Image (cartoon, rainbow, N blue to C red; front, top):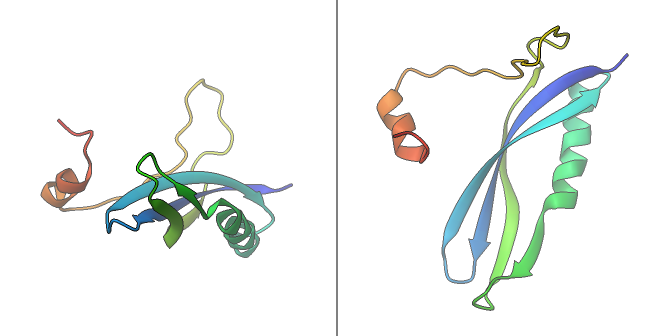
Length: 104
């Protein structure tokens, strides 16, 4: 039976106008091992990297910055409608607030 993993991946969108936008993505991967999960994830990332023209006709390129983490799903079996998939800890909330635009 395959194990469920969660990967935290950081992409960047680079344009010819030198603007950068970063995207943090959480991806679920089913694999036989963590090494297998990383291989599956790397193939997925290669397929998702691409270029396109934006509304200003500038070329924008989506590219990988880093695979931040790959971890087993915390609670793969759940009897409720809610399931915790991934968790990470930090101790500098002020720095986190600077990058997390959804915090009020």
